[in-house]
Length: 610
Ligand code: G6P
Image (cartoon, rainbow, N blue to C red; front, side):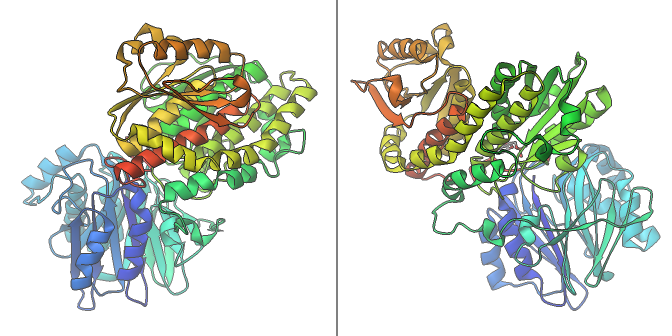
């Protein structure tokens, strides 16, 4: 997590860096800071606790002028959010550094540097790196070489940007395990954790490879790889509209992103399906080869993406008849596995930079899986670059920390993938056609659900003063319930738990009373009758039920049962559509509670640390 931005230009860089930080705030927002090398070749630094706006306010009174600068927005890992722990960190008066990632061996390096006479002012692992580079600089008098020598001693993950007042015309940047992109300008160049930060100044980007170290000057970029060989990295153009980091008419990014879903679901289908069939070639020239003979799928993901994987398991086993396991990446990476023959490894990630997911992928590549497929939303991300086959979701940049459109586009991509796999496993053409036809209806059905926004806002009032809630679903709607509960806890801070409805009687029923609202998703599938019995179990204990139900499911509004009718949907595509009212519900509860919807406390969008 944490966001890094840097610039070297003819013009003053403060404005560019502040705007970059504002756009990176989704990565962390407990403090922010900037260091600029001024005309007098000294380092000027500003750091503030809290959001980027606080830094902006402080800098209005005391602007930093200069043509070379680095900046950072922090998500605390080592040491509390405080001005002293905020980046940039300095060693002496002349070297400043910003860092994203975690240095695992920082304690031992700290002791060593202390013994060398370096004084530490913060609790961060980053300050160790600053002193280590400065120590090398005293011997080598060259920033690039000093950075290279320093990183040879680091264990962990990092993206670094370093400036030194003795070399006022360039910055040195490097990456290992954390994202870093170079923005290519005309007579000016930039770096950032995410291309989004730099869209106001460029749309041309170079992605560093692991182990690369780059020197960034205003009129040139040189990159050396891990071995110190000079390398070229391809320049790519940013594909999405430059306004994606703007809220437009919406009060929050999250609401904007919820409303974008009909469009982005459609975009994720485009070019990949006809009216009745999946175009397997559109999944990549290697797709047919890789999918043939897949006997097992192992899905790995974190957070919301994990819930998408859980939905996909129902689809893959039902439609393709292929065994499927799903596990969160942070668990997968630390246990022994029995890998069945011909297992496809499938990572799902919005950002493509989640540290646990990447670590799992890297292990899997050594472990003998058939191939690695990624479902991802960020072109050029580490996950995309390291996978054998990639299906890009077309959600566009997602800024709200709570994931919405990324999830529904992941589901769309996963269903298309499932159908391609199912075709290799004997799914009849008519059934493929039936599901693709149903998928074509989803954007419209999501729009119909969005039209219920006002009613859902009204419903949300019942949650405002509650401390706990329960979400129920059965079958492929159980992960939808999990996702609904995750959304509510993330942004409204109400404790929300999700259960498969059939499991209610084995524990959570003990919690049910009038203070515990119970939310249920009830499409008209073959489990609806069983679900209705579960609802009666809740009602009999005085629980208040909020049911999102298919008109045909015939769930009646009665005392203690609030029913919101959802358009009739095919049971296979129902998880995509039924997610949307739960997103809206959480959103409105959070708005009523006055929480920070787009940047909820303690969370960050892209978790690039372990
Ligand atoms: C963080 C975000 C979640 C996201 C998860 C996985 O926790 O707050 O919204 O689902 O990371 O991220 P990924 O980018 O891998 O999908």
